[in-house]
Image 1 (cartoon, helix red, strand yellow):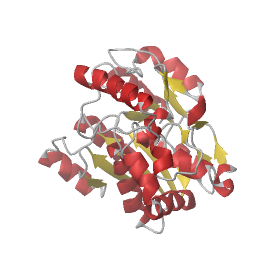
Image 2 (cartoon, helix red, strand yellow):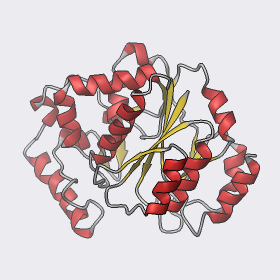
Image 3 (tube, one colour):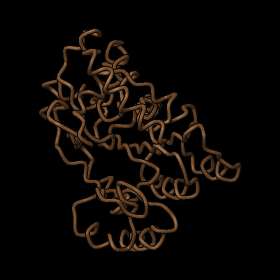
Image 4 (cartoon, rainbow, N blue to C red):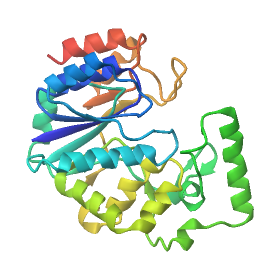
Length: 290
């Protein structure tokens, strides 16, 4: 048995349709951002399909809350001893292959499909991303996306650079810090290792809770520092993501102009989908996946 773990923050109708399609072959677990309103009729649909869902964490972009929601979903799925493989996706994903083909692809597969890089070697928006874990941030309280949040972020970096803050040293973090995308596919033992490691290393959890974009660091740092698990990682998560601005979003909100690129590639999911721009693309992918 395999599980799909969905991190959702908007568009309850699209998320429900995605979950019900996947539910024919997978156990589906959804975390809805606590800010979302989930109408009674959608809860009835999910309950009827025996889809597991929760809404416990107020998710904020740039904060550990996204990682915390992923941990909650993993712990919930691990309660079912029959689940041997898990896939983490967002509520703005859609399938690029049929559910049964995706399921069969990972049957008896013990590889971990995950992107990763050494954080010290990566810069984003001109910032060494190791700073995002070396310095202190509080984006559970501050809106990182607001105009104030953008200036606040620059101020935090400047002040902590001047004062040579090193949270890693203070917390006695002796790991190489890795980063990558939150969208992964991994067998049960790798999930168990991630959860057990986090639970038994409060210093690492503190690093993540006071870091920036920590959902992009935790699994990569834990697994890549384990020789046993690192050798099983394949640096390809088979997601189609368009790293361009489109329909006011970066990464892009996909539309029919992306259909050929999606279907030509070796992908199992694509993102981001949002109405009305993606409606025709979803319809065409559904026809293609039958």
